[in-house]
Each structure stands twice: as C-alpha cells, then as structure tokens.
Image 1 (spheres, rainbow, N blue to C red):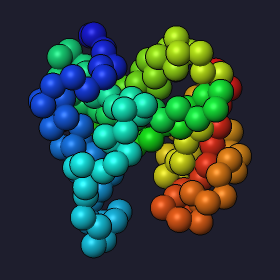
Image 2: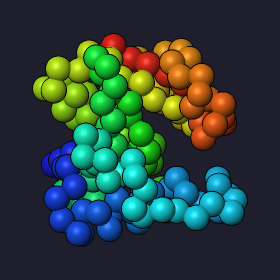
Image 3: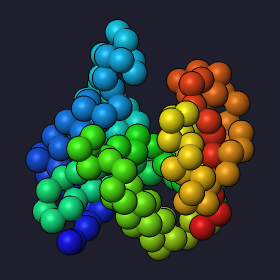
Length: 149
C-alpha cells in the first residue's frame, strides 16, 4: 500500500478534489440549498495548499492547509465513504503534519464536524476555541480544535 498527499498539480487533481468534496462534505443533507463553488477564493488563494490524498494511485481523500501565524488551519478534510474508518484518515493527518512541519509550522487548527471530534481526539487534537468569528458564521455547527506539532 502506498500513500501520497499530493498538492494539486493537474486538472485531474482539481476534479478529484471537487468530486470528493461534493460526495463527502457538500451533500444536500449536510448543507441544504448550498451551491458548491468550484472557484471559491479560498481555493484559488496561492498561499493555501490544496491536496488530493492518493492510495495506490487512486484519489481517496482531500484537504487544504491555510497558513496562519505560526501554524496552519486544516480545512475540508474528506475520505471517500467506502474507505472511511479504515485508518486512511490517520495517514492523511500524519502526511499533512509532515508537510506543515517542513514549512516551519508549529500548530494546527481545524473546525471539526461534531461527528468527527472523537476521531481527532484519538489523534491528539484538543477542543479549543481559536476563532470566534468562524464559530459565529460558517463553522457554527463545528467544534474548534488544535494540535501542537
């Protein structure tokens, strides 16, 4: 088994990222009425690192890392449904931490979906409010978490 956390480099990578997000994160059940923006400014921001997570050459996940102060905000983490709860998310997180450390980051933050809090706690993340504005707006259904790396 080989894994790769690959920064988006091709139209196929971008398409895989959008497909996985739509399948996992931006469903009608999770976000009724929301229209997914394939050209959202946060995705086109050059300082934000966008990734497709590969397993044996097949895209199975995605995430984004936005720099912030001494660290980064982990955004839009997703593993395709048939492969969830099989350890792939832990590998994605480890590879993302390696990437962040190589760029001098010392801490990560994220807005965890409530049903994902236990997963993150097992990986050493702790609940901590780190941005009241996000909690009052688009992350209002989330639990903010942090992890020193």
